[in-house]
Length: 80
Image: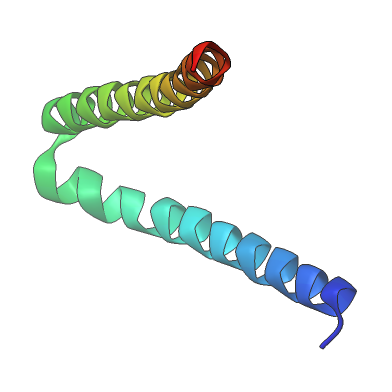
């Protein structure tokens, strides 16, 4: 396969996976609400939101560490 075909295939599969995940969440929501109740679902939603924010922060922190560590090493090589 050429690189363009591979890129298109991967993009389509990634999009299909995202659509499937969203659809499953939409389908499962009424069942989850029925099973755990409205108050417990609120706690579940709060917890998953907090975890989402923490993972975004972790991603940003990781890229910052890589950036500044590489800049520091580059500066150290100039001294040697």
